[in-house]
Length: 139
Image 1 (cartoon, rainbow, N blue to C red):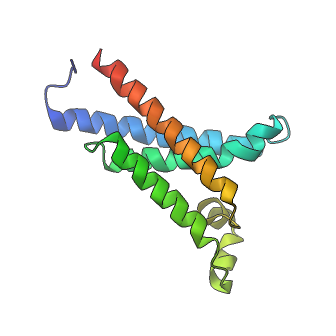
Image 2 (image 1 turned 90 degrees about the vertical axis):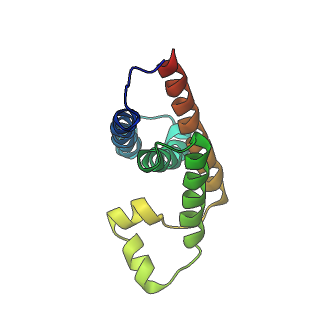
Image 3 (image 1 turned 180 degrees about the horizontal axis):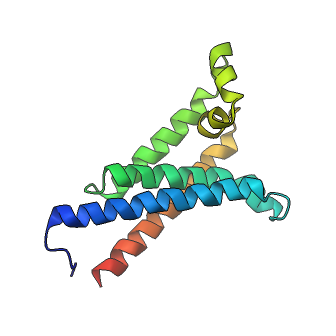
């Protein structure tokens, strides 16, 4: 059983945990780019996008800790897929945003079908970690 005696206290604690997870995944994602020269090629090519989807998943869990894990999983996938689809739009104003560091990290640069697979894998792994954490918490 959970040690929380008030539901709102548990949710607050969960939200703090998810916020920490967002920042940990952010650091891992930025690290996967910063240390690309020493990481395996597979990690360099795939982990950044997967970790970005993990971060989005934990962001949704932060906001919707009271909802089912599947809700955050689907929301994160829809969000990631929408961002990827937006890369098909190539107007000058949005391309100038994409040329900035923050714009490239948030909006990406160009549409790649492989990114959809990476996002799905990243969000699914995050949801599995979440399920394992919640299951362990109940023991």
